[in-house]
Image (cartoon, rainbow over all chains, first blue to last red; front, side, top):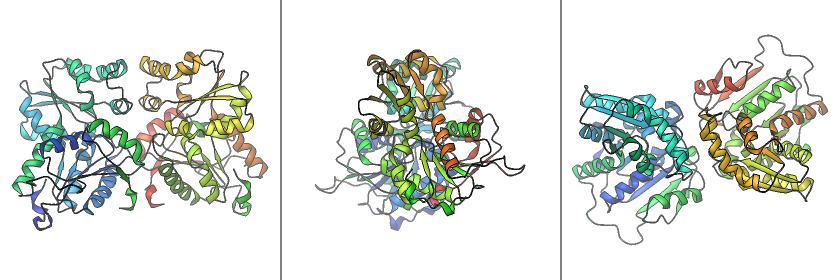
Length: 282
Length: 282
């Protein structure tokens, strides 16, 4: 977040928080926000027509993200959370430059938590090809302490396996084990779950890495940082919105029904409905 | 193909054939076209920015396909091949209605070949969720012979596994086996590979199904039907285009480099270059 560009006058306490992701993964971040600041209103957008982002280029991910930010701003959001590691890795700098509303990504909070967790200063990161290729986690962590070693590993099959619901399955176990073996061999003591889908197979990843390795879920720290920032700007709501206020609204770029099914499995509050929009028009 | 709308005056023999797919899978169809009608010029478009299509809705797939057809028509193509089962299942009727250039999909040719192959009149189809959900193979086959039984099985993990290069791998074997077990149990004698990625794991699929089951690759029959149609319309080129004529041109909606890598592994002719365009502008 670059505070300099932010136009404080634009930000209304009663406004919603905008959260977006390439699809459903960002809902693990929404879940954390709901837990930590339950009074807030949320507008969520999942780009289900163009998901996934993690295998695509910086230019494409940036263009898609800019469209989504324009869409979210039509709700006069008081802040935007890029609840997607690939967006946070590829597009956050451009998004920050182009908007006067605060934008928070998931990478920086995740990097900070990992730094606090590591004892042997050997941190692993698992994420999409895009996030790993960008080197963003290493950049943030090195900026905090340049003696820390970062080992990144792209895990492209984990998202499809999670989306197929194979959360506890020998195949997911086998694939995760292949990805993680080299991180085990180099003796990391902290592993960043650098993709919003991965917390859903946390127990599999933990079993493979063993109890000595701390698993860092950036979603938790992102929600904490969001709360802190809203508090500093005096934008935190003191009480829950009234009945019928539509506290949580979900938008997607593809049909809503499939999203709803997955969303309701992640968020136990019950997502009553989602609305499809044409994101290419923004 | 609905012949009625076609404006024969628009179609020039010397024009290229347009071929498109959600990404790289359609290259298995291009490969067949290159083999069967080697004199033809081809403009290929892969929608790598928005791939995959197989998990998305009819409306979204149709909108994307319409943009691509508009893009291909800027090259004055003499025909268009929808080299993607999901597009052929969801969008072909709309595309045919809106354009006066002949359009060929991969489903109808695949259905026809399967009909010719089956002896016990029990045909299996493996494909994306979209293609299976549409029931399109069953519709075409039942139209040819309503006593044939069709068994569809969506195999969403096979595309990511192929794209990860796990063509010969115990994990691909295990996942394929799970998908195929019910088709083996109901004693099909013919299996349609209803997604353009699947021919790349043909040997795995063949090993699991056993030698008694015929595997149908719609790409072959699609190229044959294309050849026949161009012949009937007197649009087949008699000799190869001259040097420097850029016989094969590849366009993508995301960055070209990753596409190039995969494309060159499928097409042995050597793809010299691919160009990225913004498909949302069409």
